Length: 321
Image 1 (cartoon, one colour):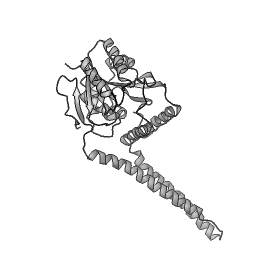
Image 2 (cartoon, one colour):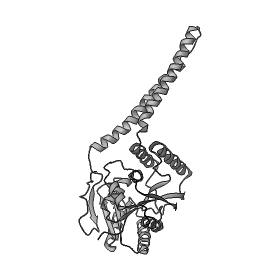
Image 3 (cartoon, one colour):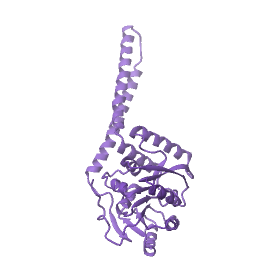
Image 4 (cartoon, one colour):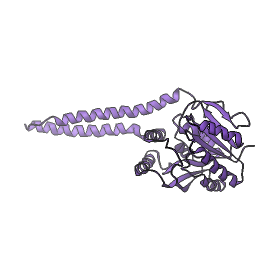
């Protein structure tokens, strides 16, 4: 019989957090008094995380472990958890305890009241720099401008989703995963649950600036075609400016005045920058097309633990929409 709740926990080098994470998740889920499973996805960890997860699976029959053959990234690890989860409702939460497990019962209450997605919306972000808070604020506002107000601000992947919504999201075949956007795009009845985000329990963040920029790019490129029009508008503005300068230069020559050609040099630099920027935008979209048409699996599973029956998907495969 399938459990009521599946808790999906992606893990990458989380040896400092695993024990505390599991203890708090277990305490919360047992307190709710309903059946559950906890799915830990080992995303190619290089520390003691794999062995610690194996030990948990040996001691706790609610634990399921999915070991990747190689590191595939946070969003792919969560996607694998969605594939393997069998619960009526699925909770996504990171292993670093920045998103407190104690919020899950409130999410469950909203779900039972009719909400099909309950996403955590951050009131405060303890332990994060002002720079990260500011850039996150700008990014979510930019995404709303480009892709529409359907994307809520100040949210991450922490959420509870009904089985119907999970089935829609996991059947989206794209490789460049931006799950918070995919859940928002899916629609259904969605509610925000405000909470205070804690600082990381232990260890160091696995989302440095470079990865954050990459994830942000996935969000924009996956849900908006507007950047493809930016070169067009920039080109039109450039032509207008060039036309004005051309008329001005012609008048100056008619009057016999002397003028330097620094304006021409400036136009050359601007036009070169415009061309390269345009090619870069087109290249970003083309790279995504290239990644999709290769048809490789999202992830490769080396082994699983804790599943009573055959896992719902062969290792490394994806359902097609």
